[in-house]
Length: 285
Image (tube, rainbow, N blue to C red; front, side, top):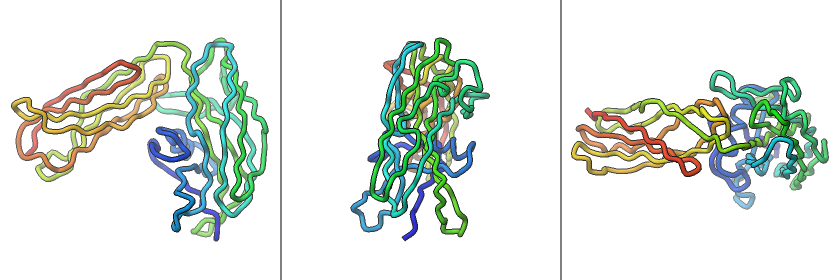
């Protein structure tokens, strides 16, 4: 059986046994900005009969409270649930935000690079089929850090034959974010609605920007009220991670149970004890 490398091109991965909530956000961005293929783990249950072999990384996101000049050591584990041996070399890149979007910058390219301080132990390794390896990642926050995040990249030169006949290499990434102060702030845009016809699934969304200086993880709920102000229903808003300056779209889908009429939607987002609510009227026709 050929090794199966799971590659994901989604905005943010959210659920999993080895990868915690929000762990895959970094991976979709790596797929868009780096080659070779970036793959990572939401492993299927190894005991399931139809579970494909996979490479996994845990944790996928590490959140660090730190101060300038402070060092931290974190452990990241690679598990090889494939029948093939994989060798990995490690490196770090800074995660910057430009025009509201994440970009990956080589270590040391900008002043205040956090990635430049990264030390991996071991710096390269081989993981056997069915085995796992834990790497110690040590970084020191500069006095004036350029950003608030890095990605620890586990690059493999091991070639895997894909189903389409092309040979691929597999790499995985773990995001490390650094919070240095309590300057947390997000700002939202007006609500947007799709599916405003009776019988359609309603989608409520809004763009949110991190206008503070620290990473923010926000989640929430959308409440739907009818024309008399009575609560019709609620749907959750999935948590997203925003780096300083980053702009992301928060969405919530409401099932097709709304009849023709006038309604009001309230999207409430919460982070670190702070609540942000945006509301708007809409009509179902």
